[in-house]
Length: 134
Image (cartoon, rainbow, N blue to C red; front, side):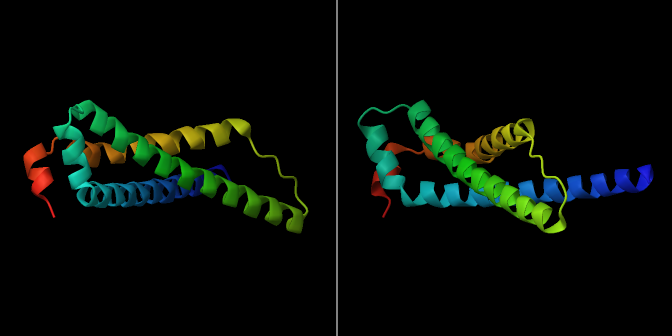
């Protein structure tokens, strides 16, 4: 029984890891599109005196908020489905606040990690080239 539980836990962890990787790549793609679409805006901000750090922080915050909203939606959906299944099967349902907090923090961390490259790309744009961008 212990070996079966260990194997199932490992497989569930692997599926969760792949899901986080795919979600992180999705966030990175969305942020790369956002940087590309807002190239002129970035160029204007850089031309009037914004520092690279300001642009970097702007896009990191955007990626983190995007990831947090997705994480919170996933947590709410998971809790709702688990509560519904628990009431249907007549088993106790005890969500852990610690696990929920860890999930929220991990969601924000995924947004920061996968949003860093697009934010850095936007921050390193040449203002003159960015202003010429159509």
